Amino acid sequence: MSGRVLFIDDDPGLCEWVAEGMARRGYQVTWRSAAEEALTLLAAEDFDVAVTDLRMGGMNGLELCERIVANRPDIPVVVITAFGSLETAVAAIRSGAYDFVTKPFTLDVLKLTLDRAAQHRALREELTRLRRTVKEARSMGEILGSSPPMLQLFDLLAQVAPTELTVLITGESGTGKELVARALHAGSRRKGGPFVAINCAAMPDSLLESELFGHVKGAFTDARADNPGLFAQANGGTLFLDEIGELSLALQPKLLRAVQERRVRPVGSGAEVAFDARLVVATNRDLAAAIDARTFREDLYYRINVVHAEVPPLRSRGSDILLLAQHFVARHARLLDKPVTRLSAAAAEKLLAYAWPGNVRELQNAIERAVALSRFAEIVVEDLPERIRDYRRSHVLLAADDPAELVTLDEVERRYILRVVEAVGGNKSLAAQTLGLHRKTLYRKLRAYGVPGDGEGEGGE
Image (cartoon, rainbow, N blue to C red; front, side, top):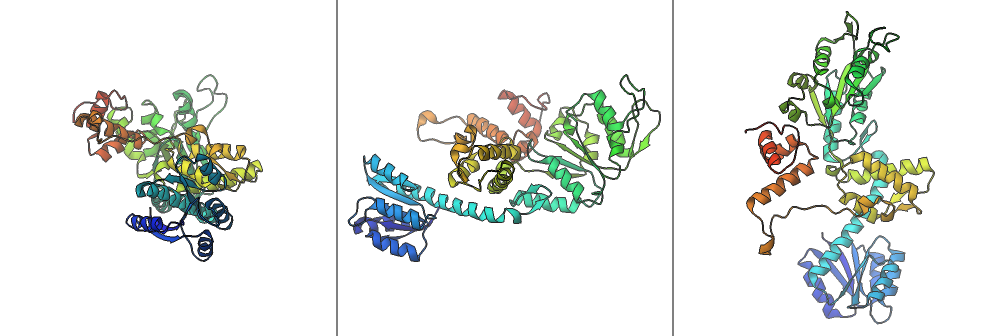
């Protein structure tokens, strides 16, 4: 971090030492030796952080802190207190100070504190900007985002939507794959037709075959009337098959034939029926790994994967986390009739630090809960779920100064491979690509680490 700092202390020697030292660390420091002079300067100029000693002649630091917080609430205040004066530091925090440091302090400690304060201010400004720009952010249907991965996805969808191409949507659970499918339908020439969706993992094979392809009366015990099936029901529109990676091997060749021939044979019928529907499919599984494991047909994979749309996980979307959070704050405040309008900077920091294994769905649920529990106009850290409040990001130890903490090269490799697999949400094909390994090599290493997964029975390079 870097920025402009206003330093207030009645010791000119200390002020000059701080100004020179922090300049070498990227900060531009302006100093004043009296609180009144500092207030005059703050009324005319902008600073990223204000730092004040608590014990000064005239107006003391505590009073100055209160004045700055009242007149320039956008500038975080750091107070300097003598070692052991914890009660005074707590009083300053209660007066609105962002943080405190104790004398004697080092310039490196001060820099870390300034970094946090400057980042805090930048985050507050970002939250203010996001509240103004949520409605202006780029969107398709109900998909919202402004991060580079999402802008690339929007561009792809805009190109593909008007066509008749089959689209394979991949991504982790909770990323919004069905929203992408609906956006494709809304942007197509078939938007006036039906959008028919089914989860392939939600029913047994016998029922799923009947639901997809239809059946004739008397085909089985409960078939009391003809059922045209979802392919026929989607005529003139879009058929969305979610979780296609869960489709059994017995049904896969029947789906392949239907996609190739554009015709289906209802259960119990001797005749085929033509259909006219665009096919969009989705999965959170690694289909390439499933092919290696012989649980998914390669010919079906290439038939459905005409265009591949990857929905990025929330953790890779940067400030989209706050953009979506603000969007959900407004939505749920309206639905719950609560006067909640914004996120606090501290709550935003927690949201940005969290890994979001449940992706956008988890974020929406967390914000809905926070709005319901909030007692103020802004969501604070205490309103967030405990798992988000207490989250600590894991790190891989690659080096250490203590010889007792040093590990072998094999152990470094093991930790790094497992960390990459975790970072990509368990997608082993993507992990292998990231690591520069063949998929089967990665499977073999993971098996040695005791990690089961798709393709673990496949050996060799």
